[in-house]
Image (tube, rainbow, N blue to C red; front, side, top):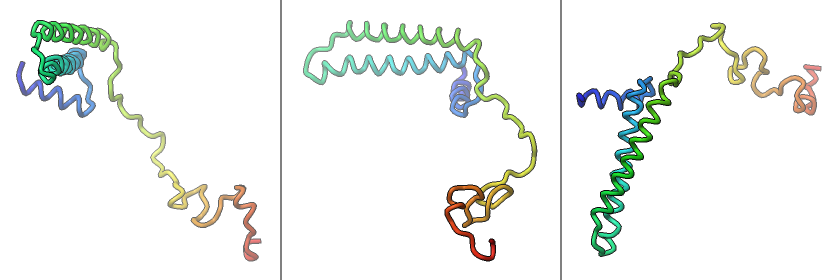
Length: 133
């Protein structure tokens, strides 16, 4: 496998671009392998830190068990990713190209700043000035 292709897959996954089912499964396998190594390292480190001897056959069994679980999840990801929808469907185009009014701009349907909306409880509670009656 070309190393540049490896980094390309990771970069496209990070950017949220669509990946093939095999590429998704590859990333799942990479994740599982890293987790297997961490679990195995912990299995070897705890006895070492407590002053006991390390049982290397136990460490090997833990590594093989976690790696086989990782392979199982990789195969599961590959076969379930076959029917996945694209991750980034094409964005829907707006129905109209008219600008949308916002309360900040005082656009259509919004009262000017500092005045309550007509019919709101606040508008009914505030008396109108004589010039607006």
